[in-house]
Amino acid sequence: MIEHQNQAEMIQQKLFTRVDGSFSIWDHPNFTAKLKLPDDYRPLTKLVEALEVMNRLSKEAAQERLMVLKVVGDAICANENQLRRYLSSKLSNSKTSAHLTAMRKYGFIDRFQSRLSFSEEDDEQTIKPPAPHTLGIAGYLLLSHYYSGDYFAKPESWFGNPYAVQRYVALNEIRCSAVEAKVAKGWAWMPRIGGKSKYRKPTAVLNIASSSGAVVDMLIFRAQLAQDFVGYFKTLLEEYRYLYDRDGRFIIDKQSNTNYQIVVLSVSTLNMAKYIAEEIKLESYGFDVWFLVDELFDKNQSNFGKAFAQKENEDIRILDLEF
Image (cartoon, rainbow, N blue to C red; front, side, top):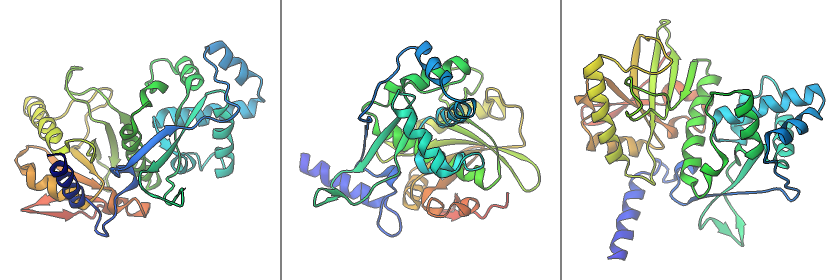
């Protein structure tokens, strides 16, 4: 029985590889992540201690570190490459990395060591993903003090949760690429929807400026190999069908009326998109459902406008968007 289940899982996973037969690192079934603490780790556990350490810095250093900390907090979980790109207009890559390293000592920043199981040769990792970073204990306390009311992920929420690390790094690649393409007008993590807190929140909402000047809301949800993503999307889309039929649009907290709204299913490969399109009647909903495919842009961020796809008849059509 167990052998049969393992074979079924292997067949299913093989269906969702990229065209070249590989997996995206940020949706790889063998992905793991563990907290990597520095040798001189002395975490601060009180707000007053965190404030005292920041106050001992020069004004310039304190401002830069608070800026880096806020970018990490706003990203929830992003890898070092993404954080460098977010801060590229303000800091050099080396300076960003230096601040991240320095802030780990007192627990302002936590860094995770990622690996793919069974990828070692001679006890050496052959694939080394860029290290994901999150807020540490001191960083969470400090940002919660300075930006009261904003959402920041608690450090303990990542323990034993490598799939959450994958999910947020993958979504930050979308966010980062939209910013670099100069089309992002706004980004919100998990906003409430439908006028009540009980409805399933989009993982993120990206506001895009179209070439005509219209603003488009993209309500983004992530499919992961580690979950029953077809079942998840079926339940989600039925709930959103109800909200759309009831209100004629999606009411999103803290966002005014926009010209157009699209539900976007973020997937790692074209094969995943095709499978979802076969299993769910996406054309039956009163709103547009698109795919945003990692495979089409994560190796070349300039392809962001060509990374969207839509179900057409019984196939997938890649869109060529002009923002």
